[in-house]
Image (cartoon, rainbow, N blue to C red; front, side, top):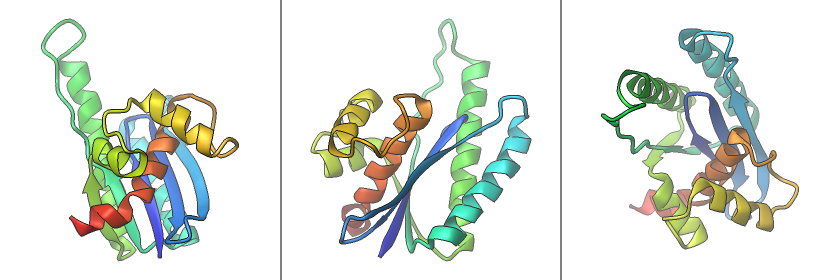
Amino acid sequence: MRAIGIDPSSTFIGNATIDWPSGHIVKVEHWARDKNRSHPQGFKDYYSWQMLRLLKYKPQIAVIEMGAYQVSQGPGGGKGNFQAIQAVSFYQSIATLCCKLQDLIVIEARASSARKITLGNGGLSKDKVWDTMRGRYPSLFSPKTRGGLDECDALVLAMAHERLSER
């Protein structure tokens, strides 16, 4: 079985495809939104990018990170924060749509659940996940940037697919 993990955000989206049960890592990569283009154009760009990945790697199951977001009311919170959360929700929806159009089984999961299954600790930060996964797979990920951090979470999601599907 081939599984894909997808870690959406408003700027970078991590993708990781693995074969299971061999654990062979097929591809780890990320999509980055062109900041000179609007989110609506980014939605179109991401849709095309994701569909091409699904057609190329042909997974049968997808695990897409489900956001756990809050809009803060203090300084720096509010409208801008809400707009970012809304954009992430759209990218999550596009990922789900792409997967369903390819007849994939889709599992929504919290990053903490996948981290607990794959790494034994659901409370790890993105930085700690990157450090741990980089230690296991030294040449696999992009540098410790937002794209590289999202790649690591995508791989953790893909690796957790079997246990998540049992729930």
